[in-house]
Length: 323
Ligand code: CP
Image 1: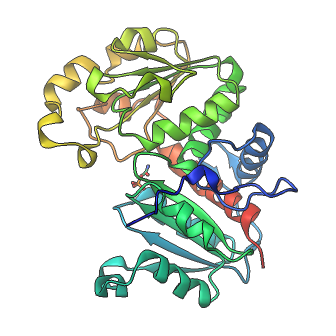
Image 2: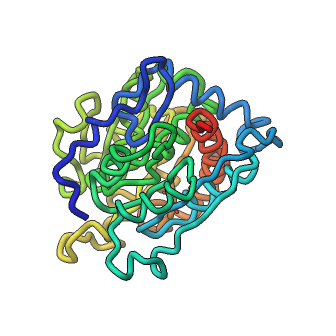
């Protein structure tokens, strides 16, 4: 898709009254608005990992899921979140839509907007795609990124900080270690943006050189090749998948060698603070970035993250919906 070189940060995500208009990136979302979203998401939970029954706050609202990359968690949780709140949901089947007849993404958007869709959920590999659509949206229509290239996955970042807050309290007291393929990860970027805004005490990003980003991109983080540097005393550890789909074949590390050097094992987890939690955004590649007994162990909150994703998406959609 030709995005015309538009910069996603040119889109105003927050209006003059501080209301969320679009959610394309967590970059620039102020701390008080992050707090509002997290508080609202928490109000949809009866405790960590447990959803309560909400009112039908989205009655009369129509939501369209447009997913141009594979997804299990994000797509289904947006749909379930919307339906729990009483919204209508349509899922564009990209493989059998008129996109196959060369209709552009923008014309597809105009078509659905003309049918009265209020909120668009877009996952697309092309950086800039969400901003391009938001730029053409009617005043009452909101765009929510469900993952944009390697750049941004804002609802994932929100569910990650919500999970940390629910288990470990104030983000400002935490040492967080993200270990894995940071370079190609929109999850790491969105989590780092939210954590920086919320004043995280320490953020370590750990991986081999070829999976680390340029340092300037994460000015508030410590980048390291040494797992022990990040894991030592960490309150939160998040393991990330190697994102082969964004790499040349020749750059993909050998899985067994990667696990030996960077895999999150019980032994490595022993370096963390007492009561540390283990997170992973999914999908997991077991025994590549995380050992079975850590993924399924008593410090793992990975399945709770999924539940929290439903609550966060409920919060974002109710804050954005305009009739
Ligand atoms: N975490 C995440 O984005 O998972 P899916 O690709 O399954 O949506």
